[in-house]
Length: 456
Image (cartoon, rainbow, N blue to C red; front, side, top):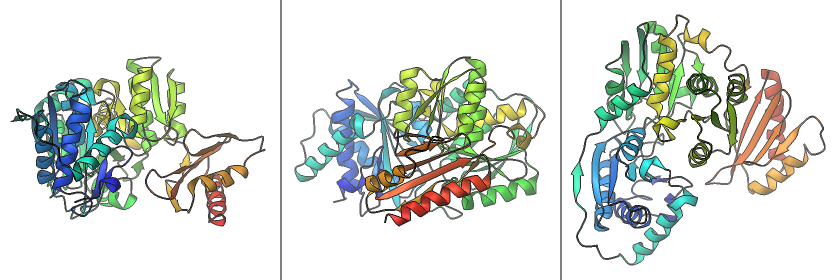
């Protein structure tokens, strides 16, 4: 049996197959999902989809069987991106699950869960209960309910694409676009979404292949953008788009092959959404970048700062009726998409902005992110809380900074800020630094790293 304690994370289930996650565990989790989430919410059906990893069809089938054992019917949508599953949860008003390990290497798999209307299920909103029930049933399986839930197949890809086109029409000049699916689920959804548009799409790695033969499906790492950058320059494309394995994240490179920062892309989308709904709230996590906050304020919006984590962003969006949410990791959230993250919707916003005027992408985003960022630097430590307290002491008493503990430790000055926060799953601290100049960023980054290493 798989390790049910190891695979439950803060926001999803994830682990190595089959050592940590296998079909038996997926079946127990499906049954627990039905009993702890679906039935208490009054749902008699649940959506189940999966990505293109080799283990995904069997894990999804086992999960669906567990749901049906609880007397809950399954709407089987088969191969689907995570945001396509969120669409199904919203469009059909049903709880949903997708078997995927997102950007993790091919040896991994996992399960993301949500309630009807794509409301997230995290550790504090049902996932711990699912974990506890799964653990109990691993020792003594429950009897099946009667009658057993039925399973009905339903294809939602066309409806998903129609929904995105209605939300963000792309009009104006024709564009040449290189799209890198990374052998992930964008290879299925990109043709449906981009096909009807007046754009010339040059596909990279659209073949669905969970072994990821070309590069890992994580565009946050610069090495995984190199093929896209080279093809954009070679083909003279207007823009390059990159998606992660389950296609809920979007990254971009401009016509010169230079990456567009998530802060710049988030700022661009925030401005577009505020133009449509002036004065709205816009949510951003505390390491999304100062540029996002600046853009929100400059266009009359109300910035809402949150800790890192998709469930926290979605909750803050719902609480404030925010029109948009941005994360540093390339996740972008939309009120009109049930507050869920959608990589393809972010891509359509970028294409619409670019097609609607004559400037190049590099020119369009030039003023949207003037800051220099360190990127996320991970440091292994023996005691997260002890190290954070020691680092905080090095800034206490300084009149030129403010300190807060919204998520780890954040220190903010007039022309730089840093955040040092603990990993949810391991003894590790994650450092992000941003400043108005590279030397300034490097000084603060190196100062904190030196202090951290002295404490370990």
